[in-house]
Image 1 (cartoon, one colour):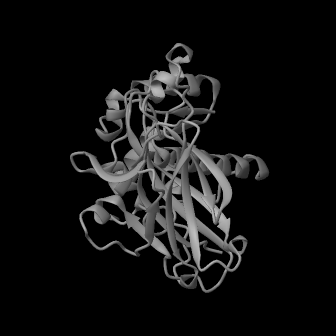
Image 2: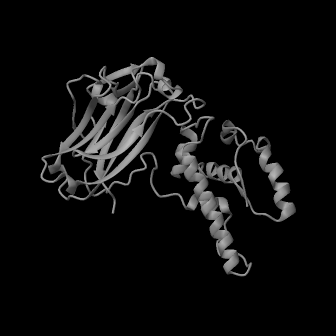
Image 3: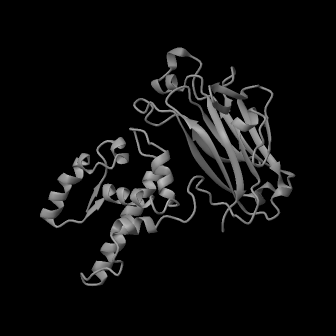
Length: 306
């Protein structure tokens, strides 16, 4: 098995096949040793060509509108490659079960991959139940500009003033928290909506976008109705080499039954300093954390699709 990818990310969008030199090398190897060649190049080219007649194919929205960084491909390219592998595995498994005969799927693998794409847009990658209203859907941008959010929620922070709704860079909005002067204390940002919006208790999705970066980055713990959930770090693990700042999405699935008889469903972001105050005790990781900021860009809550 050989899985071909691009030699330089920008070439994935040019579709100049002569520049995909790795596949040309792999093709000879695959032919010599009779190995199947699973081609990112051919599959991507096929799907983009299909956009001329089938513009609703979800992958194409991402391929054209979301140029990925040179450091690492984004989640939708990972999904694309996973579908490519799955389609080829299905083909090879059928050949084994059929004693080496032809697969009943006469189309090329590139078409099989496109047929595995879920119907509808991947833009939000929602798993929300479309029959049930969304409980909360807000962006920092709309809130700060006094524009209508999709579904409003109450936003509050503790009296420390650590969390602020602000535009830290032109056109970049967020609820931004920084560490307190007393590093042993925590500061909280809380989003809440009336539990009456959720008539049927059960599994609920909470999604939020936050900024991941390589400097001045803190770490938060989430709490659902006062119960500790997960931790999220704004600092990349490979912060020393990955000098990119981009929004990422996190998803929490929780059971609203744990909220009991509360009139509001509360989702809390709790920020606490990880960096010692003594300068002589700082590690490279501590220095990278700097002011230990955490930036929340958007939040959304909805009922999980059964």
